[in-house]
Length: 165
Length: 351
Image 1: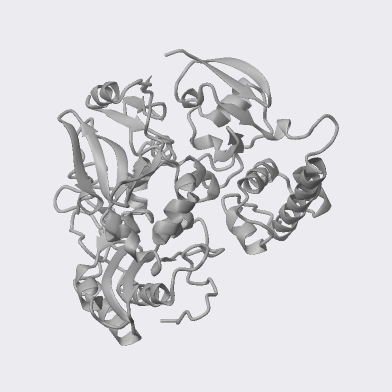
Image 2: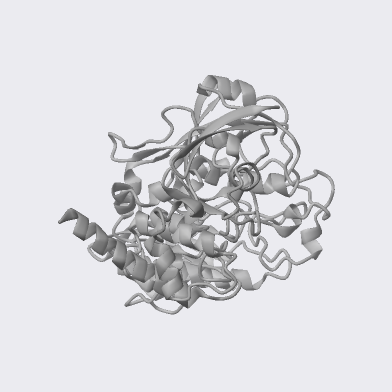
C-alpha cells in the first residue's frame, strides 16, 4: 500500500511517498528525511526522546502514524536555531549543564519549547518539573534542565517585551 | 506491528461502515492503540482514521447548563478550557494527573474513554490472558498482582481500568453519545465499561462500528464546582498510572452536605461509583467520622484478587482524604502536582 503525504518540516514543504502505513512520524523524520536529531529511545511513548512539535504542540512522534499527519506542520530540533544563533532554550541548556550524554536533549529541548509556548508553568519550578515529566534523562541532569527552562522562559519573555515595546 | 489497510473517511457514516467490518479499529491520536500494535497485543487489519471527521472537536455549553465535548477534543485542551475547568475542577485535575504533557496534547476524549488495561500479563504476549485470547487463562491470578483489582473482578480477569478521566466522569453522571449502524444512542459512562465476568474480552457496551462522537456533562454536574477534587496515589509522583484514585464532589449548603458523589479508580475493570458512600454523606455535616464511614462503605464489597489486600485500606484512606480535601474547597488553580497526595495544601489531613 503506497501513500503519498505532504508535510511542512522546519518550514520546508516535503512530499513523501510512504511504502507502508505503519511508518511513524519518528521513522519518517529519521529514515525518510534524514533528520536524525529526533531520537528513538523507548519507541513506546514513555521516554520523550522523540518529542517534536506538530502544529505547535509537543507530542511523542513514536506514537504518531505519519500517514495520519498529512498536511501537518512539524518542528524538530534541526529547525529551532535561526541561522548561526541558538534558540534561547538551546543556549540555556548549555549555560545550565542541562545534559550529560545528550541523547535525551533534543526531546528535552523540544518539550521545553512546547512547555513555554503552553504558558501553564510560569516561573514555578514544581510546575516546570511536572510539565517536563514526559522526558526522562538517564544521566539525571534534571536540576540543570529545570534551571535551563526557567532561564529560557525568562529570556524569551524579555525578548517578547522588547519586541512589543 | 502487523500490516493493515489505512482508510480516512470523510463522514461519520462512512467511518461506521468501514469500522463495522471484522478486524477493523478506529484510530484517533493512537497513543494507546499504536503502543498496543507495536507490542503485537492488538492486530487490527484495518485502521479507520477518524481525526479528520468534521464537528467532533468542539466544547459547547448546553441550554441545561451542562457541557458537550466532542470526541476529538484533546485531553490538554479540555483540561485548560477555563469554563470547563471552573465548572468541573475534579475532571480537569484528573486529566492533568494522567500521562505526560506530550500524551495529553495528543490523546483524545473518545480515545481516553476506550483505553485498554495496563495489566502486565495483557501486555506480555507470552503470558496467558483471557482478555487478549478468550479461554487462554489468566496468568495474573497467580502472578505479580499487587496492583490488580479488588472490586468486581472474576477468576477470568483481575485487570483494572487505567483511566483517571473516567473516574470523575462516572461520579458526575457523564453520558457518551454514540453513532452506530442503528443510528445515534446514549450510554452513561458508568454503563460504558463492563466487568469481566466470564467474558473479559468484551470490555464495553460498544458494538462493531460504534463511534463515540461526544461526551456530555449534565447540568447538575456543575453544582459541585466549589467542593470537588481528584486524588491519585502513584508509584512515582508524575507520569504514572494510579495504584488507587478517588474523585470526591460535595454540594455543601449551610454546613450540610446536600449531595455527594464518590468514585474510585484503579480498583476494578471499570471506574467504580460508590453510591453507598454517597448516601452516608448526604444530609451529614462534613466531618472526619462521616468521611471515614463513607470510605468504609465504598470498599465494603472489596476483596483481594491476590497480593493486593493493601489496596483496600489504601483506597479507604484515599476516599477519606479526597473527601477532606473536597470539603476544604476547590483550590483556585489545579495544584502544581495535580491530584498528588504530596501537594502541600493548607488544611489537608493525612488520613
